[in-house]
Amino acid sequence: MATPDFILSLRETIGNAMLWFPGVTAVVLREGADTTAEVLLVKRADTGAWTPVTGIIDPGEEPAIAGAREVLEEADVVAEAVQMVRVRALPETVYDNGDRAQYLDLTFRFRYISGDPHPADGENLEARWFPVDAMPQMSEDMQSRVGAALRADAGVDFVS
Image 1 (cartoon, one colour):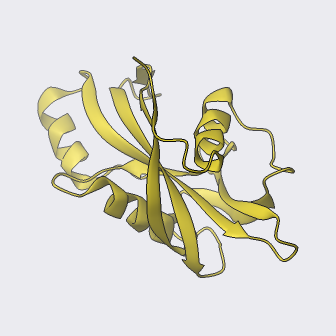
Image 2 (cartoon, rainbow, N blue to C red):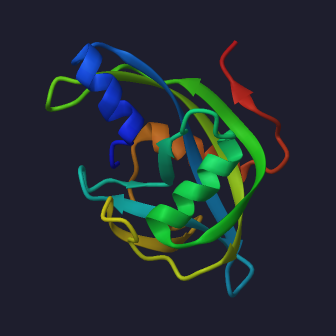
């Protein structure tokens, strides 16, 4: 993901020290041609992994609005948040340059409104719809995020 300017400014001051960030995962669903649900996935340029759209919430930004913004920026798709479905503190990430970060991920189910997916901002190699029963291989964590969004009206999945 592209590094937001506010993070670059922080890094100038604190170097590689651990930063805690609120993040958002937007699992965008639409009904397919044969009424089979489809999920929007992007293939990340940095890892080659298929994932739902993810991103960092800007300071003061509402999480659901951040998710919609990320979907538009990364895949050129307009979508609206329907429900928060999962909350997780993710393990620490150490980047190749030594930067350390930990994310609080807020996963939302989104409803497709319009647009034809394509990699819109250079962060991804591909963006496309997959039938929910024929998704590509994903990490266990990403599968869990998509799975939470597919459980209609099950409430928010959180660790207690």
